[in-house]
Length: 221
Length: 236
Image 1 (cartoon, helix red, strand yellow):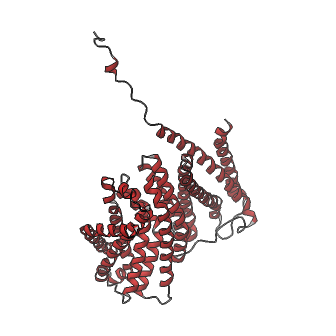
Image 2: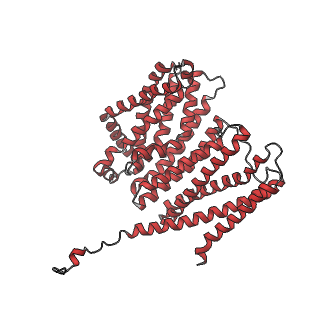
Image 3: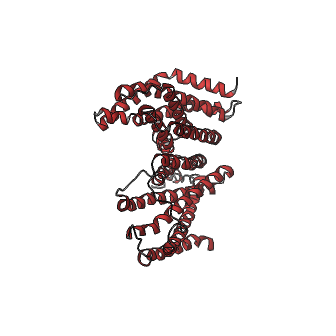
C-alpha cells in the first residue's frame, strides 16, 4: 500500500470514528442557514436570491470547526512526531489529510443543500453539477485550511488564528462557488458557470501544489 | 556609524520629498477638469499603492529567502516589511474611501483593486497576528514565511475573481497615463514614500533582529537567593 493510501485510510478511519463531530458540524451549518434568514427577513424572493451565498457562508463557518479539529488526534501525545518518523514523505500525510477534510466538507455541504432547498426554496434540477461545485469548493477550502490547521494546532488561540488566516485567503473560492451555485439555482443564460468552475479548478491547482510543497517545512521545523 | 544613520537619513529625505511633492500637488499643479480639487489626493494615493505593493513584494522575497536560507535576519526583514506593507495597504483603503465618496458617491465599492487591497490587509495582517502567538522563534519564522508565500500567491487569484465579479475603478494611474502637468508631484511623492518606507523597514528590521538576539540568548541567569547568601545569624 502506498504511503498516501495508507495515510488516507488512517484519516478516513479517524473521520468515521469521530462521526459524532461531523453531525455536530452539520447541525452548526444548518443552524447558521436558519439564522441567516433572520438577517434578511421572511421575504421568500429575497431569501431565494441569496440562498447560494448563505449556503457557502454556512459551509465556510462550518469548515473552521472541521479543519481545526482535523489535527486534534495528531496533536495529542505528540502523535504527529511519530507519523513523521514513518518511511513516508510528509507530503503524503498532507495530501491524505487534505483529501479527507475535503471529503468531510463536501459531505457537510451536500447535507446542507436539502436544508437550503427547504428554507429558501432554492432547488435545482442539475444535481450532479451542484455536487461538483460543492466538491471543488470544499477542496478549495481544504487545501490551505489543512496547512493552516497543521500550524495553528501547535499554537495557542488556534480557534481564532485559523479563521483569521483562512478567510481572506479563500475569498476567490467563496466568490466562485457562490456565483456558480447561484447560476445553477437561477439559470445560466450567458453560460458563465464554466468560467466560475474553471476559477475554482485554478485555485485548487495552485493551492494544492503550493501547500503540498510547503507542508514539509511546517511540520519538520 | 554611517550604516546606523542610514534609516534616519532615508526617513528625513523621504519626509522632505513628501512635503515638497504634496505642496506642489496641492498648490502648484493645475486643477483637474472633471474631479476638481478632489483629484489632488492622487498625489498620495497612487504613491501609497505602489509602495504598499513594493513592501509586500519585498515581504514575499524575504519569506522565500527565510525558508531557503534559514537566516533569522530574513525573518526580521519579513516582519518589518509585513508591518509596513499592511500599514500602507490600510492607508490605501482609507485614502481610496476618501476619494471614492465625492467621485463615486459611496465610501466603498466592491471594485477589484479596493477589494483586493482590503483582502491583502486582512491576509497579511493575520500573519502578524500569528507571529504574536508563536513563542518559538524558529517556528515563528517558518510559519510566517509559509503563510506570506501562500498569501502573496493568492493575490492575483483574488484580483481576477473580484474583477470578474464587479469592476468600477478607473484605469491604473502612472506618469504615462496622466497629463504631463501632474507628473512631477506624483514622481516626487512616489520617491518620498519609497525613502520613508525603506527607512521604516530598515529601522523595524533592526528592532526585530535585536529582539531575536534576546530570544536566542535565553533568559538571564537567576539571581542567587538573598537568604542563601546571607550568613546565619548575620542579622543578630
